[in-house]
Image (cartoon, rainbow, N blue to C red; front, side, top):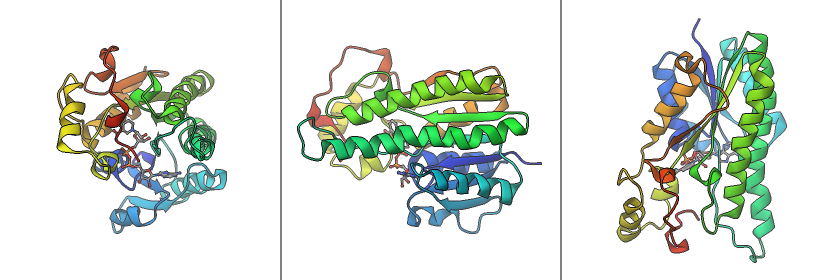
Length: 255
Ligand SMILES: NC(=O)c1ccc[n+]([C@@H]2O[C@H](COP(=O)([O-])OP(=O)(O)OC[C@H]3O[C@@H](n4cnc5c(N)ncnc54)[C@H](O)[C@@H]3O)[C@@H](O)[C@H]2O)c1
């Protein structure tokens, strides 16, 4: 029987690359996303279905899990990748609304994802959850207090879940990407000068690709990582190996 995986935020970017990689490696995949149009790519692929789901809504998490159980007969791996990033200024009028929305997707979404998938995997003898966090979860970036907080929460939620679910065979790990070429950059206002400045501060001197992030996620989800739980795997071109470079706010790349 093929393994069954759920990937959230699978419409574009890292989530799409992960869903496609897991599928190419023999998994049956539920690709979930808030944006139905972004899921158009899932049409007509055997062993892969698209499900419209907002990870911050409990009933959508239930529906996503039921889709895996009803369509593919089980659940073995879960990638909690859906996330949003926005600039947050402490004094802005909408600062608290922005904070609430970011926390509700990036942190509450992780709680709901674990809450609804871990028991189903434990019932079948075990499984793996990979939470996609960020370098912003292990140190702070300027003008992004909500995103920084949400990703730090995601990391410690994963560690807590690793403790609580390990005894029932469910591994829970974090993959923390650094700057990666997705819509966050392509859709942003990143000029060639900004890109050059940004990459100058990355030891590997370039942005990562969605496929490079997907490789790290697929490793943590796979039996190759069978004794790894509660870990944080940085996939960031070396950014967090250097604690000392401050990127001025002008180089922020999200909206
Ligand atoms: N790209 C980077 O440089 C980078 C760096 C660090 C961390 N990350 C993290 O990686 C993850 C994926 O980011 P990406 O770069 O691929 O972004 P992206 O914007 O290309 O893709 C994110 C996807 O998540 C979906 N989504 C947003 N809110 C959702 C919700 N409430 N429920 C379900 N789906 C939702 C979007 O529709 C989109 O398809 C995010 O958690 C992000 O914070 C990205």
